[in-house]
Length: 262
Ligand SMILES: [Zn+2]
Ligand SMILES: [Zn+2]
Image 1 (tube, rainbow, N blue to C red):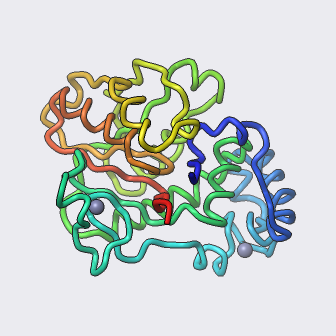
Image 2 (image 1 turned 90 degrees about the horizontal axis):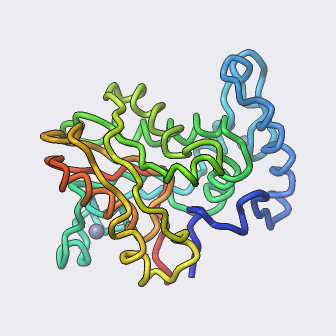
Image 3 (image 1 turned 180 degrees about the vertical axis):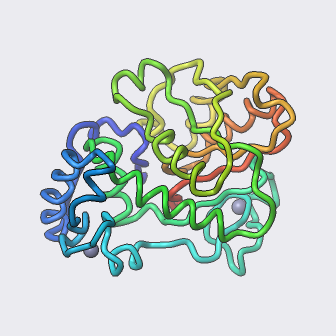
């Protein structure tokens, strides 16, 4: 089973780095913890978070940013690779509750390392380049944008424990980048065991009634933002709750998509 970064307890305090290249990254990523303030990030020359080369005002140098693993042709419904970007067989057989999924990156090295450092390692400044990837993908797609963006909520207890909601950190930047309002209106009402601790087959039941939407969503077309989509069960539960609260259509926007086991 490939574990998502989502709530993976073994990664909670110390991201795993397992290659020589990753070793150099630890030091660079660690320094980002002290560079959380945006003004400081822009005032000082940066070292690339992946290769430590000079990267100007950005956290990733251009060659590293350009080499991130990307999903080039994906199923528009679920975001998994699909020939000619056609709707995949799984979605044809059973349409997901999303009108669309946008997931520019593949959850593989080094995207997994960046997301883990951001989420569990306190490298909050990485929200910027990760959100930029999503913003560019949203701007580049065809069709009308939704009316509003919602960050996938954490339970109050989980948010207190982590100190921030990684989805909100990405969503507020994408909202500005795309020019769509960021709303609340969705709450996590049940704290279920971390999805990464469960087999993929158990994840739908685990989050089935985890979310509730309020009247803010009525009549709106929304995009729910999360950092990673693995099985899609969490986002599907959130989308279903949003529709139950009156949302007309729900898109899933994530930075990275986990590919299913081979
Ligand atoms: Zn680099
Ligand atoms: Zn699909």
